[in-house]
Length: 127
Image 1: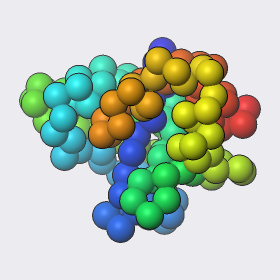
Image 2: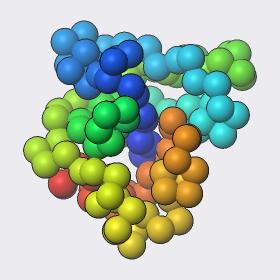
Image 3: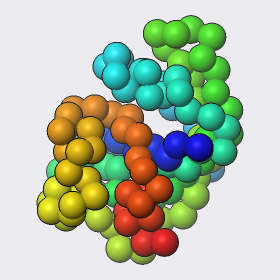
C-alpha cells in the first residue's frame, strides 16, 4: 500500500482544523498528476499532512477511510486525523535528505498530493 503526502494551505484548512473535525473529505484537487495520485489512494493508506503558505512543514498524520473515484476528474477521499508530528519537518530538511532526491515533492513543488515511499513516510513522521 502506498503512503502519500497531502498539502494544504492553513488559511484554507489546517491540520488543527482536521484535528478539530476528526474526519473530512479531501477534494477540489485540480492538477492532473495530483488527481491521479488522489484517485490511486486506497482505504487504510497513511498520509502526511503538509502545510504550505507562510511555513512549509510536515505537521501531522492522517489515514484514508473512503475513496470515491466515480468521477475520474474529481475523486473524493475521506480522511481521518492521526497524530501531530512531534518534530515537524521543514521543506529545507526534506530537500537536504537523500531519500527525497527523486520525490515529486522536491521535483514538482506545486503538486498537492505526492506519493511517499515507506522510508520517506518514516522519516517525516519520526517512526
